[in-house]
View 1 (cartoon, rainbow, N blue to C red):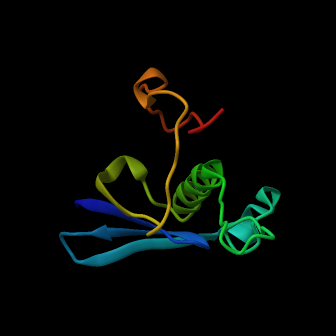
View 2 (view 1 turned 90 degrees about the horizontal axis):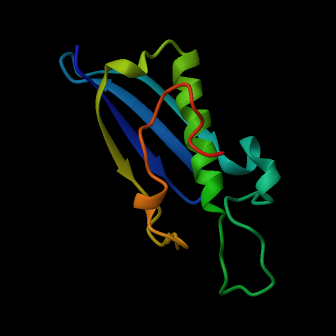
Length: 118
C-alpha cells in the first residue's frame, strides 16, 4: 500500500492529508490552527498583530512546531509514518524565511524520535 503525505501551510493553519494511492482512499487528515494550538507565539490569526497594517509577520518556528504537532496527530490517529513514500507541500503565498547561515551548515539526518528544532 503506497501512502503519500500532503501538507498545506496557510496563514492560519497547517493541514495534512495521507492518501493511499493504490485504493485512492484518504487514510487520515489533521489540521493545526496556529492561534489555537500554539498560543505562545502571540499570533491568534496566524500572524503577530502589528500597529502598521503593512507589516505582517509570523515566526517560522511556529510552522516547525505546527509540523511536529500535525505529525504527532497523525501518529495518534494510527498512521504509520514509516509507510509514507512521498511528501508534497504547499505554502503560504507570501511567506519568506530569511536565514542567517546556510541550511547546509545545520542540516543532517532526520529521525522520527528527535524534534525538528531544539
